[in-house]
Length: 181
Image 1 (cartoon, rainbow, N blue to C red):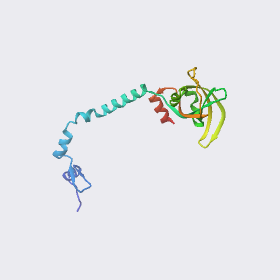
Image 2 (cartoon, one colour; image 1 turned 135 degrees about the vertical axis):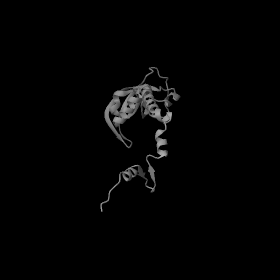
Image 3 (tube, one colour; image 1 turned 90 degrees about the horizontal axis):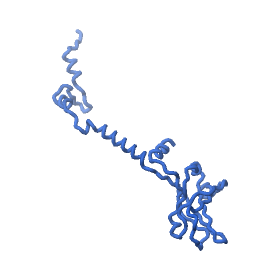
């Protein structure tokens, strides 16, 4: 005797989906038809568009917002026998690749002693200095304001935290450069 599959059995088997818990869902049941027949809410319909629009607005804002990167360093001030002040900063070896982007050096604490707070880099010594904190180059900086109030430094030399300011760029360009690296 030959086993025959009737068309009714085949339709019944194909209209059920087995679940891992042992139950089954009938594809043509009233619950499934209700779920399929419901119109999705506005949030579901326009959700992707809203998220995409918000993402585009963030990208546009990041292209407009300026970013002023800075490199932390130390400003060293020495006074010679003629009471002339000499200003130097240390630039780490790995930071020298951005030398073309250097715009100025700022030191907020120096202004508390009536010393200039903004400097421009005059020259960089080509000798690489080695120390416990790594390798660095010494740069001579000059104040942007030509007139300096006469000061007598009791501690010679003195050192302050400073920042080497790089040229401004947009936040988007800065982020893209970080991603590409």
